[in-house]
Length: 168
Image (cartoon, rainbow, N blue to C red):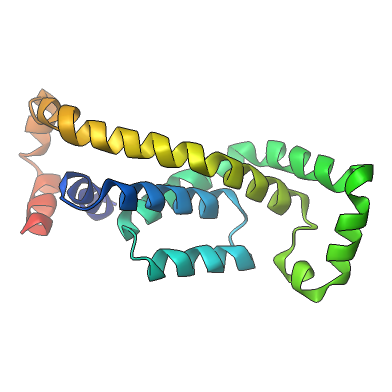
């Protein structure tokens, strides 16, 4: 876990693009919020690997959002159930369920549908917020952060050794 955190700090402090880190957070959030063994998560993982986003940010976001998803699952279920039981949407759900492709995607499952729709709706917000936070961190917070006593103490232990080894 220390290695993952050190790699994340390395990416945050590096010259890599802030958009790449922001997209990593978004894709990790989408994969973390939805149930793991779904076909759309394979597509998200493929996108993450093809576009060479920061994998450390992706994994960290996935881990954090997977933990948050357990707390949000009742709301994901309620929203998905509301959509699936809505009378006006019934013809769409019936036609999708009759197709093998849509059945494999498992959007007839209330938590899958609810979490996917909410994560897609929240994705642009997280993208711009994380981009803003990353750029602000790099321009303002990084210098202040390095002056903290806690950071000075961390530099004296094993974590800093791992981080320094990754920096080269």
